[in-house]
Length: 635
Image (cartoon, rainbow, N blue to C red; front, top):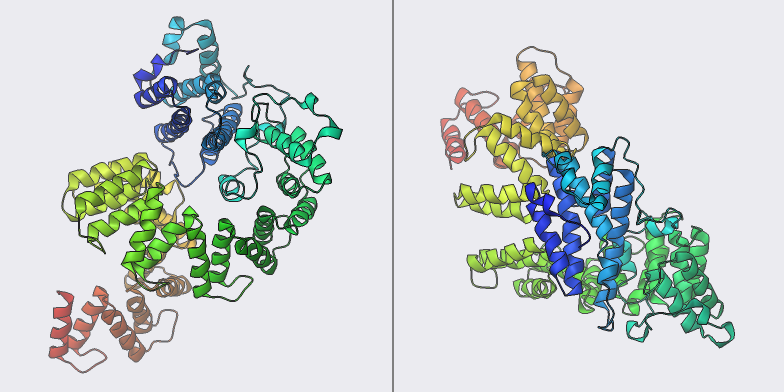
């Protein structure tokens, strides 16, 4: 190792052990995997130690951008780590292909300069120790890196390992999304490259125009595109794709479509992208057909056209291209560019699953498990969940856990269920901690429930953060600690999630009513039906106490509750007519809606009916009916 990482043992032992695995591991795929874990770990710790909510749904690059906007990570380091993430993903693709064992990618994959800079930045920006005290024990190279961060004021750095004249295309990750790479390049259809046929050092100047076939031009272009045994160079890749395309090579034409769509190698031009994609698509190139479907569906830089999208997805789907079959299923399900057909949606979804498209397994498994969109069939649910689980799909692993937990199709086996749940978590299902916490709470094992909520919180699961806030604030299963509860609720609210805003708003009503109402109104504007319920309740209190209230606001909140299908909707609607708030007073309408609310299980509506039957309000006095609703209330 070029650097010593011992300083991490002070506060970041987990990171230290992951880095040790990187350098000790001999299997290069495991090295790549551990590097991804390392990047994820430093990003999570930087968020949590700086009290920023870590959104596990975001990409690594997006979460790095959040740190940059909070002035926690320097711009250049953010950019270089994002570029490194992209490189690791490409190397993963290459390593999963059939590459000669003699090829050593360790030196290419382990960029120790970036790793060390990232570790020092994490320690200085997110640690509590004074790392300036350790400077004298470092070598010169280590001192230089530490001083960059200890003395940083503006966050602008230049690193020796980055060429300042490097092409922007090489380091810009904003144009490449994981979805693009996974769904549009690596699903069989684009790459012409056979890694077993690659020589270790292809030389550009060894190629003579008159002796080269379009396939060789294509192969060389792919080498530069992937950075395989040569420096990645989109400009050179584009040159060779253009040469191959001139000879009518459909794969090169498809690549040119991609390059013009994304702006690789210079010009971003959707018109030219469509030209090359269509040229290849008309020759039957399934990736180009799929790309056209995607572009016309998204409507980005081109007019959205669902009919065109459907046409091109269908072309690729009928040729057996699984991603297109999956996309076609979505169009049929929603009736976009075609007639709405649940039957055809599931037909194409099962076709994509038969072609081993992993995203289909969970949807099919869950659909057969719930029986909402398709006939209930636990056997098929188990089949598709098992297929996905064999590929380590985190959602399918969770689905199998559910089936064993509740004994659906299989014999109830909670031990096995938790084995699947834990495996799902290992595969990145951080949201499952909340579910496990709930299961433990239901069985009155608060200690295990808390442990899972803590783990969920550490992994950026919003529901776990919310639950911890509620438990501590209201003393549910734990000793009441309002300060601690507020701390968790505030972290959740930083995400601007509607339900999180509702929860903290509701809590604030006790401490600071005005602040609480502002949070609730913000949650309501973002669509929270529970915030609407809380706001109408506060409005009703003001009305009954002869305090200021706004009729139209109350009416709007009640309509939101009704639209959200909450049981309390009819109760509040009845009160509007009972008191004549925003509507003409009408006792009959009030009674009919109160009855509807009671039948839907609203306790407040039941209590009001008991009162009205007992006192003979709006109806004849009827003790029997009052008793009937009393029994229902306490069932």
